[in-house]
Image (cartoon, rainbow, N blue to C red):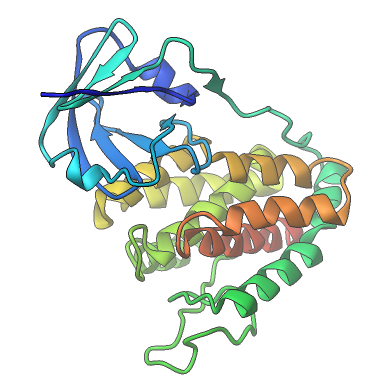
Length: 298
């Protein structure tokens, strides 16, 4: 059988640290431009075409426009890693010369003054989200911004209003988390993407005394409900609880914490919103909710 050989464009920092000689992986799911392998450690290892953004666990490869993973792999097939090469049924990927993607680690310094600088970009982000949703007729099963009228808002049931607040009791937070996990449409449900964005916004500030308890409760509650969503969404939520996010989210959080122009903030927000069909929009809405929570701590 002919083997299609690829040289990886980039390898996420977690993927690079997880793969070891003689690892046996299994095809979890196939899509046109991506394939998910399940690693023996239980987490997924996505193979993405070069037009995708970097992810901590992903390997990006230069596939042709005609390539469709659904014609080249089947769920349950085995893949092995040996001497820098990932070998599947009819394909192989050489990782040896690929650059390792790692976040730039330019997160803001966690103090109240730096937080004020980050929060100063809220209006720009909210405007950008509203404009993007209007232009692209973005739909979501969660309300993206307080008071926002969004596409599909007249359907029944209407988009769910998310209530997460710094002063909410653990019981109140548990009720909201339980309702959001697995809620909505999409490969990664709207509620999951919203929660991922929310936790991304809190992450740089999680050790501030005013935030620490809320962040800890939220991470515990989300972690306890991961079984209530699908495997792919569970993977990304679990990684978010450990502080591992996609390149667009890392870049946006870095931009928000530095002295940047409105144009730079808008460009970073656009990269987040363009991720997936609706996941990026839900995620940015969650980030904005997280910023509102952070503002209430001051």
